[in-house]
Image (cartoon, one colour):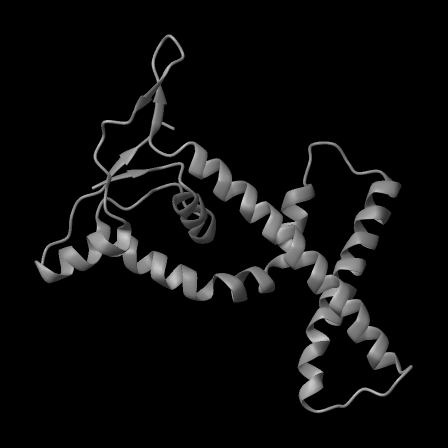
Length: 177
């Protein structure tokens, strides 16, 4: 089975398990991926401050303004998340007009709306780009040609076939784009 080493799943696998060595067999790779997808959200929530620190880690020291701005953005983000999660409180509490809880729900609604709209737009962009570039290659003159390579099964389909036939296929990692 050929898999791309630069695929999103492979990159996420290397980040989640903090390794650069990829498995050579589909069976352990599949089960580690399944476990990773189960625990990815709690892991990201637990390690969010460290992830944010890694994202901003540069060789130069940050200035006071950068640190203050980054701190303000973290607090703003945490406040927005709390407001967005306040909808869970609607199970136990009925909000009254002009209360603080109603204000928090309003801010949470704005956060959900902005998140859904921005997320939908970004997802739409990615899907359109993938749709436009599916199976298309260019020759040396710049003309589009059809990709003659056969379509490969997904990891899940390959694993189900391998489990049914009681074997574990070897993974050949493709290091090209």
